[in-house]
Length: 81
Image 1 (tube, one colour):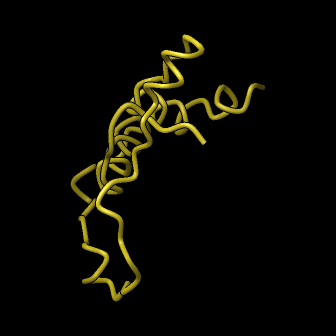
Image 2 (cartoon, one colour; image 1 turned 45 degrees about the vertical axis):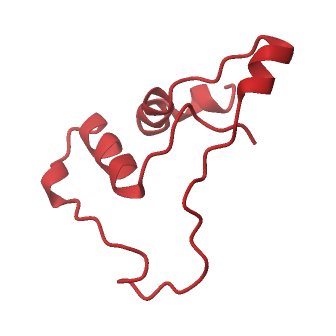
């Protein structure tokens, strides 16, 4: 698994996807996991350090916003089709 260049909350991801699809982002309302009844451990960060990947192999990860936009508009690009 390779991480993006920075963390985004789920509501930020939903808003990026909705905007890419031309939908009303005002309908997206963030809700904290605890408020929704989720009581498992929630890690503060989910981004993996990609510095070694870049330094060792010269591979730069794409910007996370670009990746999300592609997932909503052209998902086949993300799976190599």
